[in-house]
Every structure is written in C-alpha cells, then in structure tokens.
Image 1 (cartoon, chains in turn orange, red):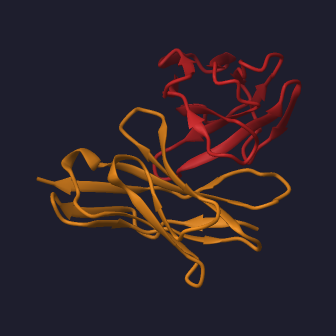
Image 2: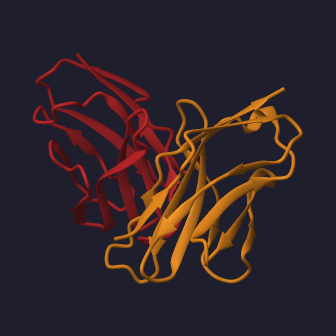
Length: 115
Length: 112
C-alpha cells in the first residue's frame, strides 16, 4: 500500500535562512508526488509536483523540491525563508497506474519562520 | 481557492440534525473529493467522484453521504449517524482522478 510520512510536526527557522521540510514515501511503482501549503482557516494551495524528469522541481513562491528515488524522499526547500512562509505544509503521493488514483496526504508539518 | 466555492464558511447545528455542505467548481474538472481535517490528523478522504453520477467511499465514509448529479456540484451530507461531526471540511477537484487537486476554502462545522 502507498503511504507518505512527514517526520517533523514542526520546523522552526529564522527569516533569511534556508528551510527544508521533509517527506518520505512508499509505493510499489513509480510515484507521483505533490506539495501543498495551508494557511490558517483556508483550503490547501498546490505548490509543486513531481511526475517524471528532472529530480529538482520548481514551484510557486520560490519553493522547490528534490526527488530522491534511492532515499524515497521528496523534501521541500527554499533558499531564504520569509515570515510569510509560516504555514502548514502537506506532502502527498499517488502511485502511477494505481487502481484508485487517490492522493495520500501526510499529517502535515507546521513551518514557523521567526523574524 | 479560485474556481471552487464552499458554503457556508461556518456552520452550526444541533446534535441529531442532518446538514448538507455545498461544493461547486467552475473549472470543468471531472473528479471531485471531500476531506475531513482534524488537528494533528492531516486530511482524511470521505468520498470521491471520478465522473458525474458516480462516486466511491473513501477512508471514513460512515455517517456521510454524497451525490454527483452535475459535473459542477458535489454536496456532502453529514448525517446524525456521524459520531464526531465537528471538523473542518474541505472539498477539492482535479482534471482527472489522480491529478493535482485544487481545494476550496473549507467549511467549519460545529455540532453541539
């Protein structure tokens, strides 16, 4: 069965420093991977996705994610954090050609950027 | 949030009453989804629909019902059989099942 894990409930970083939000996945075939961001009392916003091709994927608001097949990871990164990046971040996965085509979401990581 | 609307934003009901949450999209997406979000548990899939007049149970469908009579609309009814209905409910849609999903602003339901 496919699954996704976000090992950190919260990540704290100072403004201007680089940030990383971790995600690992488990699928039996090729993964489709997604990152979303949620601001308080709002719906989720799509940030970026990996389907195939270049392992470094660029997305919205200066975020990027690196796909690592050997480590089954898809960590979200940004070179310089902003206070406005503070939000809840979700990783999601689905399996290419899977029977249900459902996205499986992680439990979320709260990013807190201190000024 | 653009293209998907959920109403109302806040909803209050007495225990034992059924309540219907609205979800409408103008993105011409085939697939639509309902999730429940509770603190510390991420998103849990309630129901999803890959095409009009068809829908499937998700991971926590008990106590909920849906319909998909129109492509644009996917209302969710929270019935009195749902033991813990107080939660934040999110609707989403995608071009096709398995593609990236686009979310509405959510409805916060409180049942007392």
